[in-house]
Length: 187
Image (cartoon, rainbow, N blue to C red; front, side, top):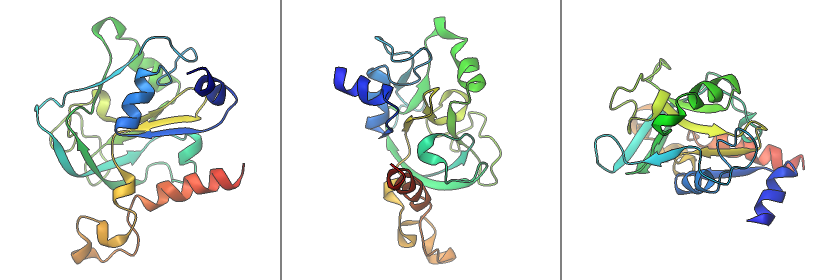
């Protein structure tokens, strides 16, 4: 763990998708309000409907972190999910934590309707009941990102849920990886 902490504290980027997001929370790297925490400050717990969800959802990119700087703020992406424990939440004693996330601009992706309006907890747009429709967050330094949806599952157009109707050349997940590649090339 010491090596991971040093890696992050040196400003290197770290990303976690789905189970990787869960690990980043358990390690105390996210949300990381006051640096790396010795105890988890948040949780990814059982979906409110109690079921595994595997389908496309809509995400709105609402905040910049190092790994998503190429993605236009406000852009709506259709990205698949595949989880039974993806509901982002805080403990009851941590009611001020959501405000900290908002104030620190740590929310990177939120579940939304196809037109980009907030899901406001409404199923199926918010597939798991995540607090404030949170699908992905970063640490205050913007170099650690965690998200539940799977951009790696929709890189090519033929992986897009409605590819036979819309004929996209590229999948919505591709811009996520192009953004990461740009960061890595700059190192």
